Structure formats: C-alpha cells, structure tokens
Length: 400
Image (cartoon, rainbow, N blue to C red):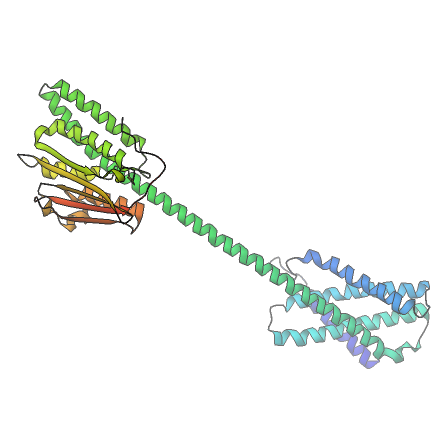
C-alpha cells in the first residue's frame, strides 16, 4: 500500500504542476487548434468504453448496472485525468527530445497509476469484490497500455498538425514573397512610366519655346501667312505628340511623318538653309520605335548645326533592317564633333536631347540597344541607334 500511496502522490504532484494557476494572457500552453482536443478525447475514451464492454463485461457475463457503471465512470475518469497530461505535454513541447521523453514516460506512468487506483477503488465500492488488489500489476499494466496509446496518438496527431501548419506557413511565405515581388515589379513599372513621361515633358517645352519664338519673329516682320502656316503645322505636330503615349511604340513610318511636320516648321524658319536627305528602307516603316524618338536628335541638329551656320546645313537620316535589328543613322553638317561624353552625362548644351534619348532607350529596351555618337564625315555629329526589330498588326498611317 505504501508503494500505491507513493504512486498516487507523484501523480497528484504532476497534476497540480501541469495545470497553470493565475496564467497571464501571454502564456500559451495549449496547441493552436485546441478546439479539436475535446472531440478527439471523447472519441478515444468512448472507444475504450465500448472495447471494455465487449472484451470484459460481455465476455465474463457481468452485464449488470454495477459493471456497466464502472466501465462508464472509468472512461470518464480517464478523460479527466488525461487533460492535465495534455497540458503537461504542451508545456514541454519545445524542450529537447532528451528532456521530453523521460518526462513524458514518468508523467504517463504517474497518471496511469492514479487512474488505475481510482478505477480499482471504484470497482471495489461498486461490486464489493476486495480481492482485486492482489492483481494490481495486471490492472496497472492495462492502465499503462491505455495511456501509452493515448500519448502515442496525442503526439502523432500533434506532429501531423505541426507539419500541416508548417506547410501552410510555407505557402503563406511564398505567397508573401510573390506578392512583394509583384509590388516591386509594379513599382518599377510605375517608376519607368513616370521617367518616360518626365523625359517627354522635358522635350516638348524646349521645342515649343523655339517654335513660338519663330512665330513671334514672323509676326514681327509682318509675314502673317508664313506665321499662320507655321501655327497649323505646329498644331498638327502637337496633336501627334498628344495622341501618342510616351510609354508606347509607334511604326517608324508614322514617326517619320511626324518628323516631317516638325521639319516643315523648321523650314519655315530657315528656308533654303535647311537641306534634308532621308533614305528609309520600305521594310523598316512598319518597325516599332518609341514615339518621338528621333525628334530631340533632329532638334539638336537644328539648334547646334543649322542655326549656328550662316549657310545652314544638311540633315541626313538612314534606316534599314539588319540581323533582326533596326538600324537608324542620323547625321548633320554642323559642329557636332565637338560634343564630349561629359556633356552628354551632365545634360548640358547639346547633350540634353541625346541624354534624354539614351534614357528613353534604356527604359524601353534595358541593355538590348546600341546608342553611339561619332564625328560625321561632313564635320558634324553622327548618331547611330540600333534596337530590336519589332512589328505589330497595325500598318503605318500618315499623320494628319
């Protein structure tokens, strides 16, 4: 009896330590999905009662209210006593395996001993059979087996739920990474669009300033017809500029039409001082280019090559396709050979239009383009642009 009392004391001590007293809200001993614990508890101990009924009560012909009551009450006792075992397992869940295993074994043995003593006392009280204590080892072995099965199921289900939670967390993490990547791509796209718009807006005021000055000069010299013609040409060019999104591409043929509108405006200013030599291969007119790509380069040629020369000069444009690429060469007869890379990078002087063009090409094509500056054979500046040869289903239509 002393051994039985010692076993009961150990079980009671474990029971008291397992149940937290004055637990703060930040203390969590139970699993995340605690709501599944009680249904599983009821299923386990109900199954034990059914198995006990058929293997013991019915087998030994003891189908009376006393034995039936004992079967039901011992199942209820097992359900209640396994609850502190559940809390104890939850407390040591994050401990090393070398700590968890011996503590779990001792806890199972203690709770099984307490349950065994309780159900034996209950059996004696209900049936008046006092000789069962001689078979304490057999009863205790059965109790140990029951609680070992309970502990095995408890840990198995807990590990399964842990794996499920880790899988969900992994999927959530991957979804979060994908979402962040998508946000980053959208932000980069927005930044790229903003950059293209900024570059476009930086070019238009410069052109408008020059054109309005020219119109003002014509009005001042009493040449209203030429001024009126220039205003009409300007309105057509601005309409093209507004109708074409700076983030989109347009066929080269349509781009050349827009360039001719611009150059007609400049010819009104410079007259015979401006000479043009365009040679555009027919198969390149449907190739896609960023809208108003060549206009700032032409504008620079007008400002630094034609306007600064007493006799004017010539602007040449060549376009042809080669090896899945569109090659465009634009040259003038001015003082373009004096431009330096430092000016191009700083955006000063003649470099501002060229720098904007290079920035737009970078925004559109990344590293898949070529932009070169070199002295032309006529003493001016030669600009070479090589971009991927792209087509779409739309055909080039004239600018109206």
